[in-house]
Length: 435
Image (cartoon, rainbow, N blue to C red):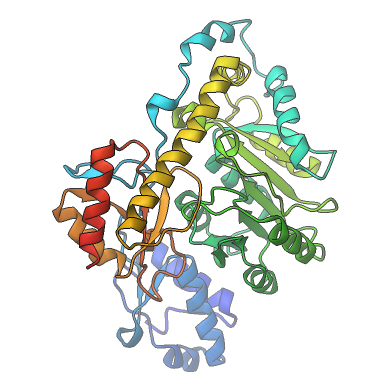
């Protein structure tokens, strides 16, 4: 096996192992040579071999098993947002909005018809572009931004990274992190660099370390961070902006997925002089995931690159869908429903947090579709107890970029659609599961 792996630098060695894996020479479960043995066979420093294995681990290609060695990762299913298929359990980890709180689109359907849009025409509906510009302009320090429409926030992130990065480039991600961002970065062949999140958002020390590690992009959730629900404080946002002054060409992607549902003010880490940025606002949380539409406000150069990837004849967003979204966003009745939905999610989450506190389980204040609950025992153990009581929860392990270092004590709970009795029962069952 040592003879098959080649390279003199960490990147070359990692690329060699990746190529052997892709060609089927290294199959899932195969054990790689120990670091000292590999370094000796290649005539490189031990730290070079360590760095190569680290790159492979961050890309999800290998798994370190301590004394059992480093092995090629098994092709196991990865966690996804939404309902878990093929289960008889009550799923309270979906992260879904309440369908009863999504405005009825039938009122706006009549407004989507019109002259068909043909190849070569502008890819953004003028009305939606104007509405989007007025929506994001108060929250961007720059005044020369451009608007692009994509098929949802995850689609936007994938395209933004692809137009700015090369394979193996490092990307700073919040830890714990939104599942879609984790998958997009890993499947794109980029290296995720974890930045811890506390009750004020991304930590300054964590982002500084990521910048020192050479990240070329940062994905940040300014409010309703998924899964923790925290929002950037004004002081933290100012500290992060000051840190980024020396890194104007690092791409900043702000994913403001909760936007119109949020009661928190918008705080940005994009400073007035920053050169590469994107503020993303999807309509999925308040108009429904099936809308598959997001607004991207970006610097002009990034907009031009995105435009090349969204040109007619490839994958521009349907003008019918754009007009439907605009019709709902401009509808006073829909606006009232969206505001009521935001208040509903906040109230139901707060009520359930109080139920847990009454049972001795502390819950920090947050907002979003779900609650992030820290348990006094490993989340995996608690989740097994809850399964026996009929509940399916999401443990924090799937959201962690450092899950292999220690098990998570957190669960993410989507409880806003539970009845009062069901919520009380779940709270009691959680309390029983951690005794």
